[in-house]
Length: 294
Figure (cartoon, helix red, strand yellow):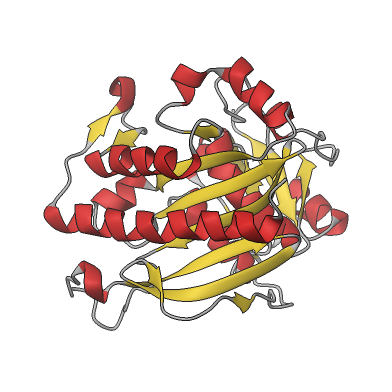
């Protein structure tokens, strides 16, 4: 079996190539369509290009957004239950901010073994937005961002330019502080409200990739997981390397042993709500702040 560090090298190679490709596609101009007429499910030609790149890098042992329906839930479960590494990828997470010229989008890939993500990489190629020059339009070669990664229980980060690392990976040590802010993406806000009178305030940059980065870098104290499996896998590998864990709302039950059991047959967790928190006390505080809509 390939060891985690070699797996991490494969994930990094994909992430760098994907970041550069996505930046180049956006520079040429992209057209937005919507999957099945759902205005919340955007698609561009860049999503399809990076999807193809995922298949090139990881071959048949891959579960990714644009081909998951063709693969099917049963086949995905079988892959994750086998002894070989299985990869889960999201070509472009945050297609709306990507197409709209905003920085809060990324590409994500995770490597799973024994049913759970053991290594992951998130690339946010344009995330270092200069807000002192808000109207600048930067070419791909000028775009700065970062890569977050984890393998074998250790988290890393590196700055990027044009989607590729400009330095070697550095150890990532999450700042030990409270910001009193929690991740609150649109899918959570659709079904729940956050009672800010309990002392926690919502923060969203419209993508799971940016949400995971905000958590890893100490901008968020906790976040929610109730989206698709490819939105969650890489971020979970990184968060768990930093000491975070999942707790089910509202009873704080810990997750099942197999990642796929968090999700329904459409690879979605929208009918449940998992809290990604530092410990059970933090999860209890977060849980007390959440109210179901209606």
